[in-house]
Length: 614
Image (tube, rainbow, N blue to C red):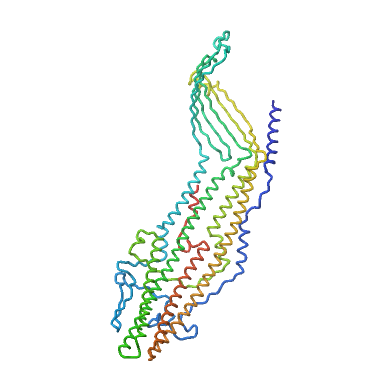
């Protein structure tokens, strides 16, 4: 008997080894993923790019060889280099900012459009305050915040698969089986017999217990079963009788589905999905903050546009007053020149109205992104910037910026998690190539008596009966084509994930390179726009000097001065736009590096999020 059992065991093991070969256990795996080797392809070339030396911004026209200064920005006392590039916004209370008027010599009242409409309230806010309010109240951020919570529930779902399960089975069986006349022995009197035509019985069975999937892939079950039997005609001495059994069963895979890593795969992938969701939440934060920064500096530039257009309109009023005065005094001015000035006034008023509307548009967009209940979009509050734009030279080494981006860009972190998921899926698929070989073990402790009390006593006393069993179950799908196909697909997806990581790494490097270049470009643009503004201001100052020294106000000269005023306003507007673009470029660089939150003092405790996974 032992020889037969040993031979059967050896045969089963031989079949398992042969099945493993047929299933494809010897398939060669692709090379492992080395992110550092891939990163070096982008980091090393970036070290060859040196640091660009940005020139200092000019402060006066003397820097390019002319003694003139900008009369529009030069204060009454103090040199030109102490004047900021952008004028401070009006500090006049909102309730008093109404239309200003002037009475030209021609008798017609010209009005400057009001900067603040009746009922509007101006609130100047620092950028940090705008961002903090957005982080707390933004609808977009709030919506994205649900994704990590949803992903966390999937971790619990995957873990719940290993929770113990309590079960109860209750069964009633009524037996009524006919026979073709069978003689049976009377259990109470062995010397007599009777003919069995019909066997009837009542069987009540109740089983309760607990079962659980094991981390190694097996399943353990412990249960207690009570059974009441009553049979007619009597077949046993005890009738009715009780039969109680304590049963323990264990099923453990030895090849396919075996191992902690294989059976924890769903949990690990769910945790990675949770981390991806957290990074998606961070992306929503970064997107919202990036748009807010862009809006904030555009709002600053829009306010400068209003100030520039107001100054331009005031120059038109001045020119109109001079022309009408000379015309009324019988000077060298005709209707042509006054009409030229009046046309400029009307045109510049229309441009100013559009510029004022743009302030409200950008302010409304900021209020929408903040979603602060204190600043409803349809409310009367107009948000204006409090912080001045930065004009500080910021110089970076490309290699340092690329290295920072590789360590901080959330897209790369997400893709590393997806690669890890692909590796796990491939390991599971490789395990499924193996044949199914399961070890089964069972143990039973049984007691039987005519009543329940005696049955329980016999089960746990000297009259108990213990039984056990061991077995092996083997299955092998011939050809194993499905498992082979799944395994091949899993490694293709793994290689695809690596290729996607390489693509993302190239995109991150491109983002950083272009963003850093934009910082330098906008700085040089600021430099050129400021020099152009100085030169244009010098041109207008020269024309005003000629007029003050008695230059005839011919239509050509009037148009020349009006055009010069327009060019100066445009030069100042382009300079303001370049300053705003420089600040937006700095924010864009921080976003390209993945450090935008840190740059704006927004702390997202991702380690705390990771702790919530468990």
